[in-house]
Amino acid sequence: MSRKALVTGGSRGIGKAIATQLRQEGYEVFTPTRQELNLLSAESIDQYVRENRGITFDVIVNDAGINDINDIDQITDDEIERAMKTNLIAPMKLLRGFVPAMKENHYGRIVNIGSIWSVVSKRGRVVYSATKHGIHGITKTLAVELAEYNILVNTVCPGFTLTELTSKNNTPEQIEEISKEIPMGRMAQPEEIANAVCYLVSESNTYLTGQLIAVDGGYTSK
Image (cartoon, rainbow, N blue to C red; front, top):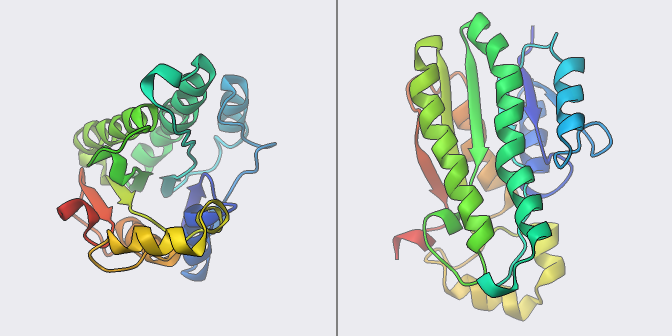
């Protein structure tokens, strides 16, 4: 019987690369659409958990996220609430709903997708950074709380990654300028982030838990 994996944000970018690689490795992957699971809606999350409570997810990857960029005096209440709900509250609620089955099964692998902006700082990222610091707080707590059930929990923090959205929001010249700031001299491919996630959720990982792993080409080590 194949392992079952839940990947939020699995329709594009890094989430899509993670879901694709897991499928290639034989996992049955669930990537709910916005209609199936609206992370901004408590009712939608509760309904999704209720409807899928019969599934024992072996793997959960919390990838979906919102990244509005604004200085502190320009942030709106809506931006704060949307980011907090999507990046922090929704993952907690999903884990609350699905971890009991993992505990009963005495097996689980959870990866929360963080960001380099929870390791280093950049202007305009105050809300985003707050949520990504918070997601690693969830990781560390659950790593301690769930270790006795053979459930390993880690955070992967992608650096600059060449997703469709990156290419849409930046000119080739801007991408080249950003790449000069990265010790590896280039942005990551989504598949390179997926490689790290897929190792952490694999049965090859038997002991690594509670860790923040920056997949960033050396950016945060400068």
